[in-house]
Length: 260
Image (cartoon, rainbow, N blue to C red; front, side, top):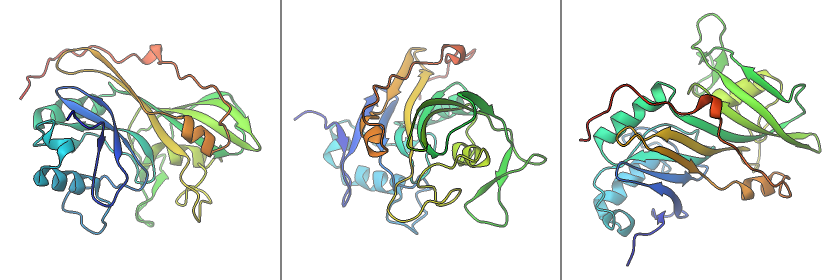
C-alpha cells in the first residue's frame, strides 16, 4: 500500500497533500482549522493538536512516511483555506521559518470583495497593530503599527464583486483582510472586518507558495487548486492563470543551513 495523498484526521474531511520532499509537507488546509499552539484546547479544531495526536496514534498517512514530527511553518487565518507548509523536523522548521521572516517566500492569495476598485493594480502599505479594544482584531495604526505591504491586482469583476490577486510582502495577522477593508473593499464573508454573517464562507484562499529550498537551493513552487473557489464565488467560467512574479523571484541566500 502506497503513501496516501491526504491526511485523515478523526471526524474531519481528508486534507489533501499538495507537495512533499525530505524537509516539508504542504497541505490544502480547509477553512475552519485553527493554527494555534498545541496546548490551546478551547476548540476541537486545533490543527497542530490533531496532527500530533494522529502521529502518536501511528495513523497510516503518517506511519507510511515514517513521520515523527510535523509543525506548521506559517499561519493562515482559521477561515482561510489553501497552501499550508508543514516542517518534518525542528531543523526544517527553523530554516523555513527564516525564509518567511526574511521575505524570501512568494505568497499569492485569491480574494473576492464587494465593490470595484478604482485601480487595476495598487499597493497598500498601511501599518498594522493589534486592536487593544477589540480582541482578535487588527487595526490600521500609522504611528505605532508594524510595517505591512500588500500588492493587489484586479482579475475580473462580476455583479458588483471583484476577484483579486493578493501578494502580501509581509506577514502580519489579518493583513490582506485589513488592507482591503481599509480600502473600502471588504472580503466577502468577513465577519470581523466586513459584513459577513450566516453561512457565507470567507472568500480568501492561499493558492501559491514559491521559495528556494533552504537546503538544496532548488526552487519550490506549490499551488493549491482554485477552480472550485472561482465557481463558488461566481467566477467559474474564468480561465485563470497565475504567473510567478519575476520581479520578486525568491532569491539565493548567503547562508546554507545545516540539516538536522
